[in-house]
Amino acid sequence: MIDQKLAAWGRSGNIIREIAEYGAEQAKIVGEDHVYNFTIGSPSIDPPACVFETMEKLRAEIPPAKLHTYAPAIGFPDVREKTAQYLTRSFGMPYRARDIIITCGTSTCLAVMTRVLLSGGGRAMTFTPYFMDYKYYAEAVGSTLTECPTDPYTFQLDLEAAERALTEDTMLLIMNSPNNPSGVVLRREGLEGLAALLERKQREYGHPIYILADEPYRDLVYDGQEVVFLPSIYKNTIYCYSFSKSMSLPGERVGFMALPPELDDYEDIYSAAVAVIRAFGYICVSSMWQRVAVDCLGATSDISIYKGNRDLLYGALTDMGYTCVHPDGAFYLFMKTPEPDAEAFCRRAMKENLLVVPGDSFGTPGYVRLAYCVSRDVIVRALPVFRKLIEEYRAAL
Image (tube, rainbow, N blue to C red):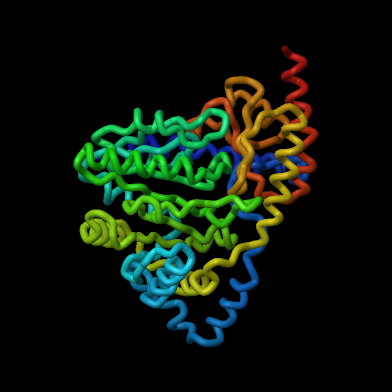
């Protein structure tokens, strides 16, 4: 018997991809210059120079048969050692090679660890707005995802709401900062307050509560904003990182997870993670690309381009009268729609070939997400359409 829940998920599709595909078809009709696609968070700028330099170096030094051979299931030992050293050097945390597992981006980390931490029972929790796939990860293992609201004006943590949302069944929090879809960077004060709350709840409930820190956008921050390294303030944090966004390598599928040595139930969690990785085929990340990525740790693409896009888009939209939470990181802007029904706004925008994603998909109705990792020219050409839409709404009042 086929699992009907899985079949239903497959039929429901992914709204981001669906709108993007609509845009691709429209481009064939009206031309790419007349489609303004802000749907998919795929980097549009070149990887840093060290990526290409390291590729050439590896090709010159390692015979092809060894460069492209199967990697160990959880990553090359030297790659894991270099990653551990980087984390220790960057954040003062004493990571070891055995604490690192090389993964196919943060998606694998999240899929593996939700299965490890929730298969025995318990629930997951996250803060709105959140990346829609978190719900699938939890439900795929028979669990549920509790949506905890944040401050409606800033999307910073609301600790009173967090305390109300936590229950004795809560085993896992999935955190994301800088945030997809809002671009908000969570402030230290709120995170330290959350850590204290979780410590208290762990004692009250008599079991660990873990955090999965989903941080593919950690290095995409602007104006000197601090991105708190969650394991440094809460020991039961499993850190998930990807090179997809920071180095513009989304198609290469390289990332890692890091388990702090003091993690509660470390040995069981580590062993279970290795078992899930093997059982579900999340093994053998590209031999060449994990070596390239680790040799470029700390490097980023030219993120000043994204900052320029943010400043242009945020400034223009707020001048027009749109309400947007100021994004301090990532490459997303979360805009409040001129009507309560964000999906209706999206459909209206699609008639103008302006493609944005409704916030309902991210647990926050009444907003749309704009991915500004596009060429500046796309933003410039799209601004008159945004102006036309808001003027139409004003005229209808």
